[in-house]
Each structure stands twice: as structure tokens, then as C-alpha cells.
Length: 48
Image (cartoon, rainbow, N blue to C red; front, side, top):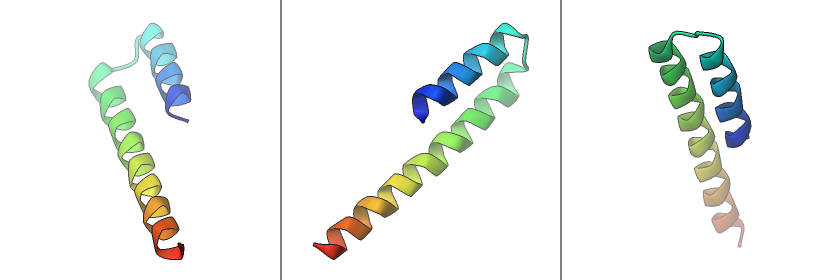
């Protein structure tokens, strides 16, 4: 998932996307991904 996001970002940069907006978008997506992963790990710990 993360690699796919970075690949999409590279594609958009090559197409002259606004770097500031792109960086903000990727940052938010990564934050959501890490938050989701953290919740899954916490749930797995509680289950065991």
C-alpha cells in the first residue's frame, strides 16, 4: 500500500503536480495507514 502511494506520487510529480499539495495528501494517507495498523496491532494484543 505504501509503495503504491509513493509510485502514484512519483507519477503525479512527473506530470507537474503541485508538490506542496501532493506532499500533504501523501502525508495524510500515510498517517491514516499507520493509525489503522496501530489499531490492528492493539486489537491483536488484546485478543491474545
